Length: 347
Ligand SMILES: Cc1ncc(COP(=O)(O)O)c(C=O)c1O
Image 1 (tube, rainbow, N blue to C red):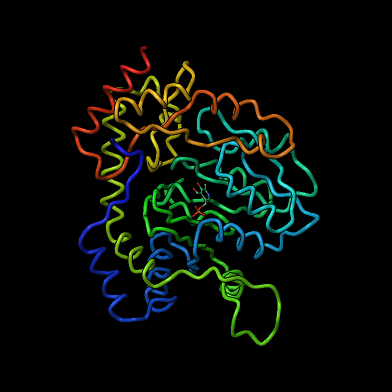
Image 2 (cartoon, rainbow, N blue to C red; image 1 turned 90 degrees about the vertical axis):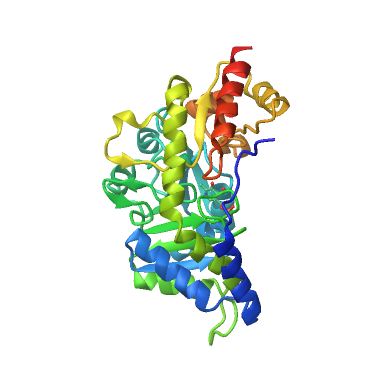
C-alpha cells in the first residue's frame, strides 16, 4: 500500500533524539530554544515560540491578540477544523468565509462581503502550501494570524511564509513538512506578543495568577525538529521535483494551478486533483489498487457551524482528492500513482 503521507526520518534524526534521551533532560530546554532560534532565522522574524501542537499555537495566537467572548474571527470554510476549535476555545464566534476556486485559499471578495464590525482577527491558512492573498488581507486592517501549518518553505512576494502575519503559526504533526510527531510554533516580530505567548504556554512559576496552559514542546520533539529543519531545503526540492513530474501527466486535473500567480512560490505540501466522479467512491477504488488517496479537507467548516453557505467550498469538497506526495516517494511509486489515477478516474 502506498501511504498518503510519510515522515522522512533518517539516521541523524535518530541520533539527535537519542542524545536527548541519553542526557535525561527531556522536557522543554536547550533544544527547544535552539529550534526556536533556527525557525525564526529561517522565517526571517525576530521571535519564535515553540508549543505542543498547531492547535495550541492557534489558541495562543488568538489569546495573545486579546480575542474574547464578544468578538468574531474570520476563518475559511475549506480548512482544518482546528481553526474552528481555536475560535471556540477563546469563546469567540467564527465568521466562516468561502474560498477562492483557483487557490483554495480564503476568498478576499467573500471576506469583504461578510465583513462585520465585530471581527477582531482573521486566520489565513496557506492551503496545501499555496500562499494566500495575505498582503491584500492585511490591507483590510484586521490583525492577521497567518497559518503556515501546510506551507513551511513557501514564499510570497519573495518573503517566506511565517513572516507575514501579526502572528504566524506552524504545525509539526507527523504528516507535515517537518514532522516531530506532535508540535507547533508561533512566530512574530513583536517582543511583547512573544513574551505573552511564553507566559501563557507554561502554567507554573509565575508570581501572579491567571489562566495559563501546559503547551510546552519537549526537548525530544525539538531535537527532531531541529534535525529535520537542517534538511528542509532537501525536502522542498524533492517535493517540488515530484510535483513537477506529476504536472507532466496530471496538469489538466490539477486544482491550485499556480501559473497565473507569479508572486507566489508554493510548496507542494499536497497535490490536489479534481474529478467529476463521486469522490468517496473514487477514494475507495484507489485503496483497492494499493494507493491511498484522501479528501484534502474532511468537511467544510460551515457544515459544522450554523452559518451562511459557502458554495465554492462545497463544490471543491465534492470534487477534490489528494494523492501521495512526500520526499521518500520512489519513482516506481510515482508511476504507480499516475497509473491508478488514469485507471480509476476513467472507469
Ligand atoms: C491549516 C492547519 N492549521 C492548524 C492545524 C492544526 O495543527 P495540529 O494538528 O498540529 O494541532 C492543521 C492540522 O492539520 C492545519 O492543517
